[in-house]
Length: 238
Length: 169
Image 1: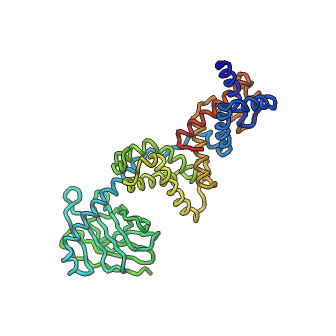
Image 2: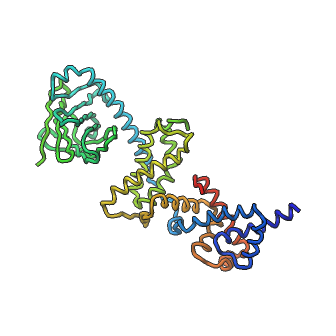
Image 3: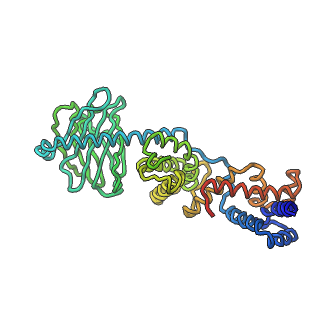
């Protein structure tokens, strides 16, 4: 009897798909519904398939008829590079802050001035740690400039400007020319460092500027890596 | 994966290998632009890495966590794009339905791609194209009852795939 019941159920169940989609002819539908009345297992299966069938209209045939779109092969490498840069920048910032703490007394005497040159960078070349001075209350801007064959890698840390402010960064060359170094958007609560680059060699860089909102902040860069001697200015854009 | 294990770059690479395709597919469906979709996926993994300490596999799977981050990223990008005209690329239009519905629709479309060809074919022809079962059966050279049974097994396969993708009724 059990086998007969199972075979009977199997035959009815094969109709449950068309039934769930509302495609079963009247005669078959009536017979199936009579079976469902007395068969809780098949009724549960019918309800389960019905919940799937109700989802089908949400899907767009044109979309799933095509293969799933794939990201470019470079995306994984880009993400790995971004995360690697952030991690290295985080280490630099921690080291830079530690350096600042050690030189706190000197920095206080220098007042508006702060370029700290610490050993580091690849190949023995010094990276430049720049703090922007004379900033309005609450605003902090730090930068680390690192020499590369292609130019200068810049790690910018900004805090205290309005969230969502677009920041444009540039380096200033020996003749006063501005060489763009990219843009980033400051977000409140984001303590990360923006990683930018410029084609200008660090050895030829005389200053770094950040245009944020309607103001531009500039800090000199001591490209020779000599004793810190810098002044930070706040320029008005006209 | 252990709690906080996404802090290591190697784990991010493994997570990318496992989930980037799906994340990109949903981002592409929601944003309709390959550049924005890649930006969304990149931002998702960067945010996941920054917040890796907060990932707890006891609460949910890594996949679910990444999709939750992507959902927020898509909202952010959608807001940013709201001031710009929409961009369509490669014939794929950006989704205009609410994000939750877009996610569900994407899951169903992805599930339809993953079920067997025989099952997908009968569901497409009978349900999406509205063709009579007898006509589809004649075209395939099989009895009409076989088309009905394939519709049944097709829906069952869809249910299994959706469950694997985390769908809960």
